[in-house]
Length: 289
Image (cartoon, rainbow, N blue to C red; front, side, top):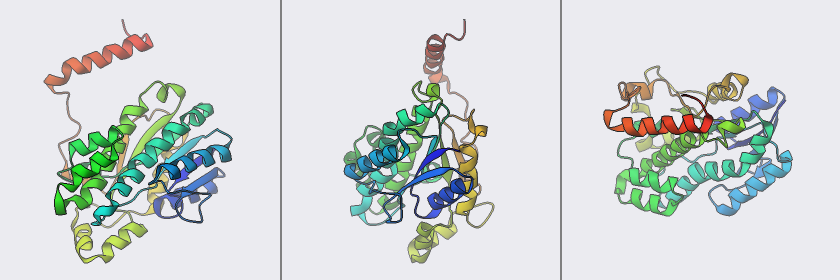
């Protein structure tokens, strides 16, 4: 049996993952701002993230078979929360995983699942500069760029945080110190799932209309247990060959809104960069002629 850290463990999809892992006999250290968590920490602050890092490492004796980064905050019209959303959704993943990487590598075959969102591909007008700022570690700059968009800003800081964390997963997963150390890092991108967050949105007249009108080809909403099933698979030996993937579990929303955007052939203008990366990999690994 394995030892796993799960953030956002006290409710919603994170709680469903914890239940599933413990039912399978695994040891789980849950991290959440809620008082029922094994590690109580506010991931929106540097002190809270450091506390989560240290307490999880202490509780697991510096060895993790996997981690599930399910903690997150959804969109809100309250502009004072924009920094909190960005810090929880992005820094609350990246800071923890970078610090836990040696513990994951100690396992030799660890699996990590990061919770992204289909908002990373279905929300329009997301600021590229805000995404770049997050990837550069500058949360304040990212939030300033989103605030300039005025009333439209509410869902955009959330979407920007999910774009940034998904790109971080793809960039990081392939690195020698991750893939080469036996750590399989992937993201899951849920759509509308029946969680306390979704219920609060449905109770709001304006947000509820937007949620109900959003296209879901299969109809209805997903359930936390369905997402937990996918996470369970992505933590299993079946995921040994899964690396840097973003798996959409959203009832078909991404496919409906972006039908022909993916797969996309390599554009001619990007061929030199593509070939250069190919050559670097061949030189580093000794593969190829």
